[in-house]
Image (tube, rainbow, N blue to C red; front, top):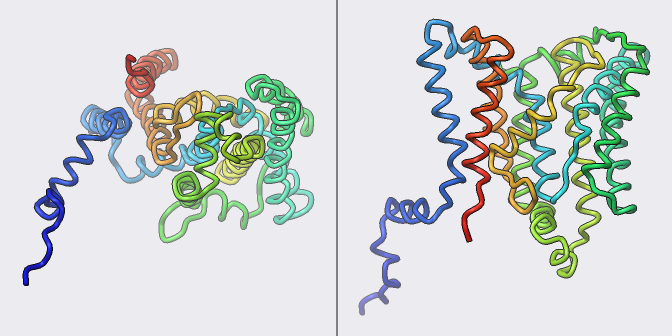
Length: 332
């Protein structure tokens, strides 16, 4: 007696054919960031071949420099996916780094780590309460707290830098390594992995995307949208605080200027990576690639010998092109 026939097309389709169908049915814009990453890498590899762009030391240096940006980008993915935004992350970086450095110097290792993380949780709770309880736009709330926190960072040390001399802290959060891999790179990869799993595989991630896509519909379906928004704002500020701790460990010191130029870089990395600015769509892996693209641009343009103004022009043109390709809405 013969076995029952398989459904039409199922048995005959080879793995290659099934893969081809999946690729042909996918949104091409989802792959633009990866194509852009490869093109930029190849361009700098060719033009800067004699300047050591592709050396292991230089590539690891790019990864180390972009690690704090990657950490903040993960938090920003959750905020933007939920339909909110956090403009205070740059100021949180400076305040967290300074608090960590001061506590390491005056109290000890555990107090420094706890204090740095507490800055992020505290700022996130303040932002979240104003957004969820008073129903204020997160843009305005975090714009206000950005200035407030920047003022605190300047005040607590009277504009003075604070050195970090605790070797155990430096080894774990800065210049240490594990099996030859820098600790800051390990931290960034761990946070990317956790963020990806939570956003794609856990209920909270689904609630975040649903809240950003249709807040009222999410609320009607039983999702506590206000709690979700509170959580993502705390998550974003905590990621920024952790990035500040990484800065303090890698630079072996803290200053109020840390993170002041990171906000636009983080947002650009996240949006280039494929996260929708107005909510509902987010990708942590894309944010990682976007962060690396920004790091490669900075490194490559410096090795090319461009002036600061020329670097700004080139970065602006590339960002406009990338954003146009990834965020352009299809015609209805």
